[in-house]
Image (cartoon, rainbow, N blue to C red; front, top):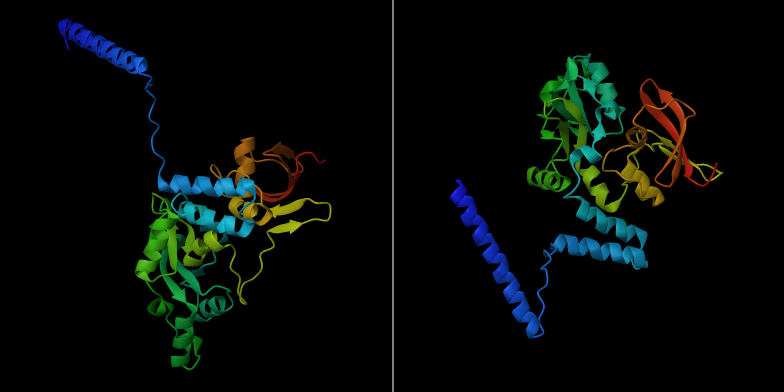
Length: 297
């Protein structure tokens, strides 16, 4: 735009402001006032705001509040927030002898197990225990005659940025229960199941085959001993805490994020109204923490 153009634009802008001021003055003379129009809140925001109000007023019991909040969270959380991380993921090397593979799967508390070859980043199949039992029955329980790759189903890979709402819809659409989570480079980050997503709504689901994970232990002195891998969201739900989970998924990740370091054993930190003491460190990983209210020693 040349100099003349800038002058014309400035004049038009000034005239626009004068016209606005004139209209505002005219309306004021008749007792009216111009007010700023606030953007309309979405139905989602309105409902979440109502739940928050009920929570503050004590009108919703804790369990119901968590379930309602969990429904809203499905559109905001990603599968990486609820997945079983690869460091905790049980899997089987498909190149092992058939007898070793079969025994490992049958001894697992899980219904489905990923199979890999070469490295964990090369998931080649998912084996369902029920399919394995049928195959064993067909060969007279002769482990040596089992070809696990013929029994296994094709693995389903999903991006770690998929929202829980999208993944839930995909599970239902495909009538599937299990997916392998990968990052943008295609490397395996963990696994997510239909049960993981449902638990975000209804809370922990346990059955007679579940093995209790001793990740959270309430001590007699009122403190809580927590494994570093315990998700912050699970801890908040179990103890009715409000630790932030925007920057970290696990409680160890939260401590590392807040301290910007990997603390040594016996180091203590205070933030978010809690006192965190590192009880055990395993190489570069915080293995166990003791947590108590910040006002206590």
